[in-house]
Amino acid sequence: MAETGPFTTSTAFCAKCGSILPLLQEFGSVKCYACKASYDPDSYSNIKFNYTIHFNTVSALSNDKILHMDNPEGPVVERKCPKCGNDRMSYATLQLRSADEGQTVFYTCISCKYKETENS
Image 1 (spheres, rainbow, N blue to C red):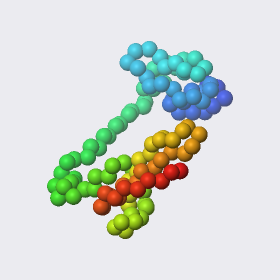
Image 2: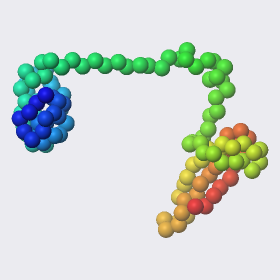
Image 3: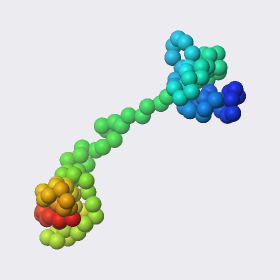
Image 4: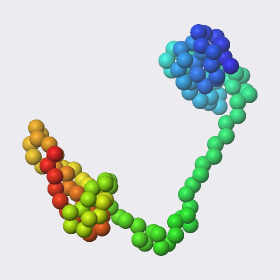
């Protein structure tokens, strides 16, 4: 814990202003970007950083699942298709009219590809 100002903090924060400190570099001290306070590297000697990066593997998805995935043309919303009754449709928006009027929303059924428009 560092206590050289109004704050009692860990070494990740400035003790004078409370700002997040930049990471310690290989050489030199750590300088706060906000108040320009400087901290020597010795105050970081007991800190260890561990990082774990988890990557998704291709085998996590079966080939059958990949072949039958929905391929929507944009974000998907819960909206009932008037043609087939499916409850999911993708949408896209465009500004087709003048700027002082609303945009046009194009909905596409994920199941049967039926398209409809809505002026908002």
